[in-house]
Image 1 (tube, helix red, strand yellow):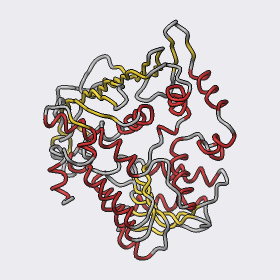
Image 2 (cartoon, helix red, strand yellow):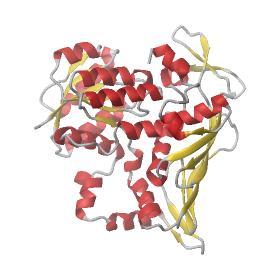
Image 3 (spheres, helix red, strand yellow):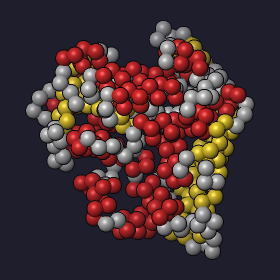
Image 4 (cartoon, helix red, strand yellow):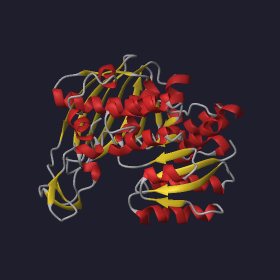
Length: 398
């Protein structure tokens, strides 16, 4: 294949980061694709994407408001799906049936059952299903994985901690909020809130560092009980969590705790750390963007020292595989990996199964909170425990 004929489906929110990443590839001289179409229910948004894309290629992508019309009229090889979570499975399956390879924004699907349908459709049509996951591709994340699993500088991994604690900055006890009720605040359209949205990046890192989970015990709550304005200006309740506390055990024996809340006004905190028999890796923030190593004897190494050592450890071939063309920005790396996989007919670094494994941990947190018991990762992944998700599956006839 000379060039990938690409469509972006869903032109709001994170899709803008995808569009900009593709454009930066072209600006770097990586001329392996053409934008052919932009599709969104809002024609103005799709047109804005098309106009921006036209700045880096000779033709202007066609604009569509319905995926069925786009697939019927255009000759395409691939689609980048950035629609709301509840549409991922139907959009992806339509593309597979039309012969397209697909990359889909995280989470893979609105429920585990929907994710399995996507994987099955991709397999039956012999198409690629990639999941957009940029955080593990950062230099800092690659460095932490190298420190834990290759260099083993913290010894045998034992535990991890992630705390993300904050609260509303304005009138915390006023449940009637001025903000709009967006799809992410609705269980049927988002599947969940912060745990399955931004939190899924963190889960993917945990699997990258420690392998498959074993058991999850959690509580998830909607403590603020906020109501947001709908399109008519009426207040409607948020139906997803604003707080979750989880204990996750991995099959290799690693255990850890994850606390995530936006319902704790006052002094907040945000950090993540990974501890072994010889020391720890700590970073402020929700992801290990600034890893610091501290060993049992007080020896410390900072981010620059660690990342430089990691980069120097890579052969030229390894460096080109992990950071092709010298790219180190996460979204650029994920879309390049997808384009390269489409052109070569190879497996992307993260496929649908990888995406569903990360999603299964997030859904296990909801399922454990729903049933009040610990749940096994395998049972949630295999859709054998689905109480929290049942009404979502019923709503969308999944």
